Every structure is written in C-alpha cells, then in structure tokens.
Image (cartoon, rainbow, N blue to C red; front, side, top):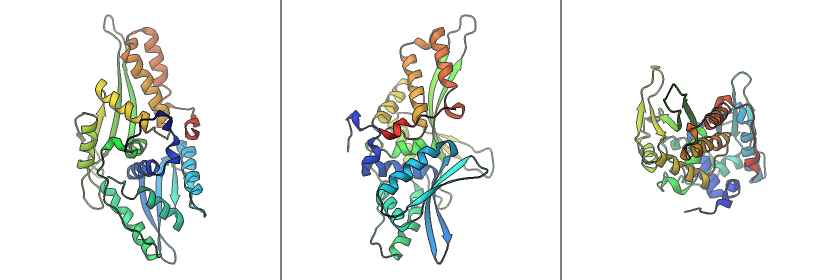
Length: 291
C-alpha cells in the first residue's frame, strides 16, 4: 500500500489502517498489557509517555473514544514520576484496539496481545490473532509509531578553532533491547529490516548495568540515509513532540545541504535550534494533531 499524496499528512487519525499500524509501533515501543484482579482477571492495554506528552496522550484517547460508544479508558498522570499513561480497559475499547493493531505488529512483544485476545474470547467475542506483519517497512506507519516511542533526533556541533571549519552532524538514533525478556525471542529480524531500509549497519550496545538488557542500535547520519528517513516521515508524520524535533532537525539538515553550517550565521541558527530540542524544549505546539 502506497501513499504519495502529501495532503495525507496528520489525517493519520482518520485512516484506520494507518492509525492501526502507527499504534502497533507505538505500543511495541512503549506499551504493555496489565492484568488487574477484580471478579476475574481483566486486561488493560497501557502506553507510557513522558508527562510533557500529555496533550498527545489525551488526543489519542479522544480518538479511541470517538470510535466507541462507551468510555474506553483514561490518561493517568503519575504523582512522582515524570510520566503519564494511556490506559485502555473497557471491553469495547480493548476490542477496538485489537482490531486496529491485529496483523500489524512486528516484534516479539506481540505475544502480550494473546492475553487480551484470550480474555475477549472468554467474553464471547469471535476474534483470532493474526500473524506478525511482514510487509516492507516503508508501506505503513508502524515505524513512525516505533520512532515516537524509541527514536531520537540529535545535532552535534564542533566550533571553529583557528582554520578548522565548523563541523555539524545531524543524527537519528533508534534503540531497543535485543530480545523480549518474557519469551527470549530476538528483535534481530525487525531491526535488520529497519537497518537495511535505511542502508546502515546494525550495531549493538552492551548494557553497563548487569540488570539491564543489551540493545540493538541504529544510527542515521549519512546524506543518503537522512534522505530516506525524511521522505518516509513526510508520508507518515510523527505525532508526539518528536514531530517538532524532527522539523528542527530537518531545518539543520537543509542548512548542511546548502553548506550554510560553515558560516557564522548558520552556526548561530543551528545552536539556537539545538537548544530548543528534546529535553531542552520548553514550548510545545500541538497544532499538527489537528491537521
């Protein structure tokens, strides 16, 4: 399935196939399935966000709610941690989420959905879990959701010293554990596909903490790989505040393409953009969610 019309943009919310693939990637990056004891075990599908992504989490909840007749869940803000959680727990909400992501998941974490599907079957719902998606990475929004969860855009600067030119690097990093701890299944296949798509090498990171897991790491910094990434995200845009980071990152990349990063004015502009990205960001514009 191909989407070449740039008018598509953030209408991602209005297309269930694209929304489903995006949610699959987002959940596989930062989601889980929780079980709560009531009269019986009832599952909750949860996605974790930094608290400054609360507007985005609320927008997703609004999107789910508009597709269902009953309350589907809530956004919970942690009292001490810098986090909020989008929780889907009603029967209709769980079924809607499963219908959206079923057949679009790509990682070993997909096995968690068995809990939700088995619970729905016990509630009399006729549903079957579909196999992992094997479609090319660039044909849906799964990677966009995964990037919103686990990707980061960075800018490196090396300032002038005597006759040495100003050096700037735009880089994108995507990391995830090497295997799913509950089953021991590897993420190698999906990360190899991502690395191949961007024409980069798949690297590994050894965990310093003995309790942590080793990770796969993909780094994009070459002109060719950045062009591929930008073309993909122009078709399937990011939805979290990383969309704003990506816009700034792309602006710096454009300056580099024109060789303006070697000029004093260019260096000053890049420094300003860098200081307003990622953890340094203090202003959040969510207009892109309404397009």
